[in-house]
Length: 127
Image (cartoon, rainbow, N blue to C red; front, side, top):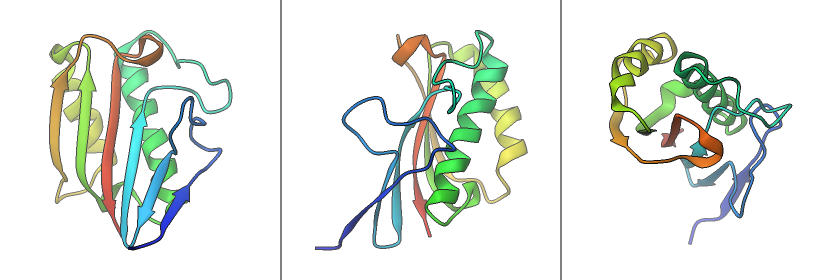
């Protein structure tokens, strides 16, 4: 069995439960869900969706970099939103962070997210 390597960085929010920011097995990195927490204050960046979705991408980017990759290495991205009406905003912001070809993706409407966040994302990175 391949060794599990735990990925951690202080440039993204610390884990607030029984999980790691990411786990690397071979050349695959499994990214835990990121919500829009400021990594220093460990509080939501704001109440507006725009600032929250940007912070989630920044947090994901920091964990990808800590794993030795970048957002461009994400092959599968899952996006969870409490209001799917924000889907167009996610596409707009994602276009600023991801080059083509884009990763496979799912956008899922959920009732609630941790700490009252409006958006959370997790994914799989291939190095």
